[in-house]
Length: 162
Image 1 (tube, helix red, strand yellow):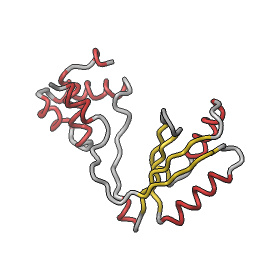
Image 2: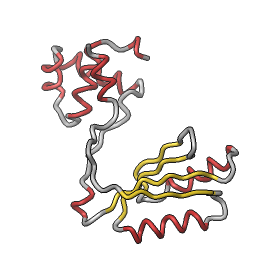
Image 3: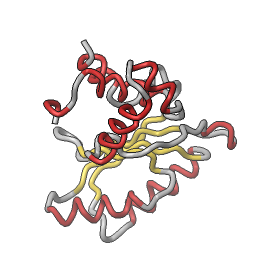
Image 4: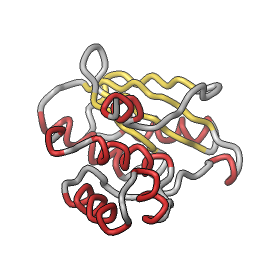
């Protein structure tokens, strides 16, 4: 895929990553193209599935106090159906913000954003009681402070534009 992209494509991606609402004319000026070829490149990046969509980053604390928990989860058994059942279950929990399948001592790392610790406890107990999701261990770690959040792809985009 990288062979299909040039420095201008990577520059477009880098700008859109941090300025998703930038106008096409402004974007074109920043990358040194006229508006029409710039728009064609953006459409191509969308068609290739490199740009998957556009969204607003919301500040959860605006809606009231929240607590962020990183949960380490391991399953009792490791059949493909066990992983599928767990993944289906967590996809529909609104407080689950991110889920990563891991290699190593745990199977999943799950980021939850909850109203409070009590809500997290309820979610955890519901998962542990679930007959169809074979969880063996579930450790929750409360996030005290977010130190850095740059979002995905920044280092890759910076390396690609050199």
